[in-house]
Image 1 (cartoon, helix red, strand yellow):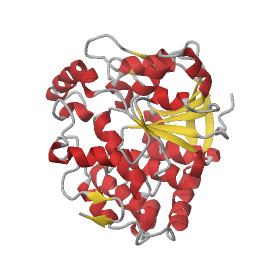
Image 2 (tube, helix red, strand yellow; image 1 turned 90 degrees about the vertical axis):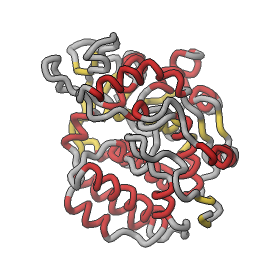
Image 3 (cartoon, rainbow, N blue to C red; image 1 turned 180 degrees about the vertical axis):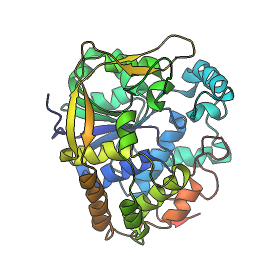
Image 4 (cartoon, rainbow, N blue to C red; image 1 turned 180 degrees about the horizontal axis):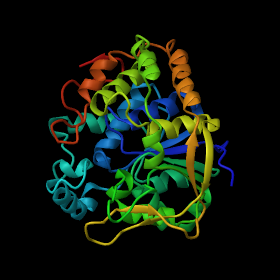
Amino acid sequence: MEFAPSPNGFIVDTDLNFPSDDAQALILLLMCAGSRVRGISACAGNTFAEEALVNVAALCGLLQRWDVPLAAGAHHSRFSTRRDVALKDAAQGRLPFVGSHAKNVGPRFGPQAKRADDLCKKFHVYDSLSALLDRQPDPVDIICLGPLTNLSDTLAGASQLREKISSVWSMSGCLANSVEKPRFEFNVWYDPLSAAAVYRSGLPILLFSYDLTRRTRCSAALIEALTAKPSDGAGHLWCTDFLNLAVQHGPTMPLCDQLVAAAYLDPDIVLRRRPGSLLIECEDGDLLGFCREVPSSPFGLEIVTEVDTARLTDFFTSFLRLTGSHPRMGAVSQFLQGWLYSIDGGHHALDGDIVDLSGSMI
C-alpha cells in the first residue's frame, strides 16, 4: 500500500495548545506546504475543541495564513462522562495525563470571549470536519494530530465523505502492551470509541505509534541548532515553542506530532512500515482506552516501525534556515506567553496579553 502525500492536499485535525508538538507540526505544515493545506479542524484533547479553534485561528493569523479554512470540533459537553472517569484515574495516580478533563467543565474565555469570536470571524469557519471535507473537489489526506473524534464523526455521517479521504496519517496508539502492565497513549485514551471506529474503518491509515515516538527523541545536536534560532519569523516561533516544550519534558523528549508533519512533507523519513491491527478496550473499567496490537485482519492499517532520525534532524534544521528570512511577525515570544496553556488549569487561552494579529500587541 502506498502512502505518498496526495497531490490534492490535506486537512489537519488538531487539539492545538502552546507549547505543544501540535503547534510545531502546524507551523511546519503551514509554512512548507503552501496551498496544499486545504483546512484545519479543531478537536478536543489537550484542550477543549472550542479553545483549540481559537488557538488555530491565532497561529494561522500570526503566520499570515488567512486563506486557510477552519472547522469546529465536538462540543465540550460530549465528554462530560469521560471527564469523570479521567479525574478519578488521575486522583488514583493511574495516568500521567488528563488533557482538557483537568480543566473546568467548559472553555473559559471570560471577558475575552468577544475578541476570540472576532478573531475566528476573520476566517471561513465550518461547523465540522465533515462540512470542510464535503467542500473538497478531490480526495485529500487527513493528518490527525489529536484524538480521533472528528474523523470518527465524519465516517459515521454521509457515506460519500469516505471517498474524499485519500489516506489518514495519525499519531496514536500503543503496540507493545500488556494487561498486566498497561500503558496508555493519550489520543486513544481520550476517546477510545472514536479511535476504535477509525482503526476498523478500512481507510488507508499510516500510524505513528507511541512506541515509535519513544524511540525517536530530540537530540543534543538538535537542541544546539535550535538554541541558535532565527531572531524572528516562523523559525523563531517554532524554536521558541520547541524549547519551551523541552523544558517541560526534558531535552531528550519524544518527537510526536512534529515527526508526523515532517514525514508527510518528506516521506523518505519513513524507513520501514508493516501491516498491523490494534485492539482498543472501549468498555467501562480500569482498562478503558487500553490499546495493544493483535494478530488479526489489518483493516488497511500500516504501522511505521523505523524512521531516519538523521534525515529528520536535517529536515528541522533546513526548515529553520529557510524560515529565517520570512517577514517580521511581531513579538512572537509575547504571543507564546499570552496564549499559554497548561493542563493543570492554571492558564488558559487568552490569559495575559492578547495579540492583535495585524502586528502589534494590545
